Length: 310
Image (cartoon, rainbow, N blue to C red; front, top):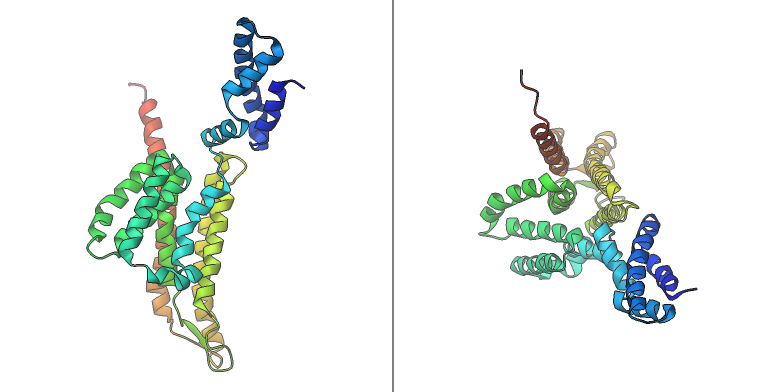
């Protein structure tokens, strides 16, 4: 087997299957051109191929560049995108998060977003940017910066890529779910149980939902083809938010039908006029970037194909 073919075999192993044929053919053309250049300088074919491979770069580095251009997302990127939610919910918050001042969160998320931008990793850059704006909303004396800049930024990003804009809004839908929909002691037992069936140990509940969020993120970003990511992301997020709303409805239903065993702090009025609107708001915030993108696409098509004059 020739040196170029050995190189191509190692190169294609760094790529998903759907990219291999096209990538191998293109890299083969580049290597052949380099090898022919060396042959014209007097080197035999074997040495020319060795020189071409050496000049071109390692298969792994070229493969990584190709993956980036093609939009392939690595597990490292997904872990970096998930780190904030692991740190501020569930076990992460109990063990580490609540010891960190909010101002430090501003610095951490700001540095993370800056590093991601500098390294051209938009996969988790938009997620970290969203956490930065969430910290701006929570920290005293900074909410005005959020109110002025975040809606405009999300709208601008959504006109080009609604998936990236959706990643930016993820922290807010998660935050609203944990702080308003899923609150402590909303359903407790009357004495025979562990004291709080739902949410039970809120630490483990938040951890479970955090893991569910990460699974949705991973499934969408690791989709076989980048074109499918948006579908997975949107479907997964709407599904998890429906779980949040269903859990609230489940609590009040159980308390109504089993009043001798369960007590709830929820009322039908609070569910209808507070919980459900918050749940609809989280779903609306998730869908907003997609609708902005659709509207922008429709406007651009209308501008590109104006009607015929009368």
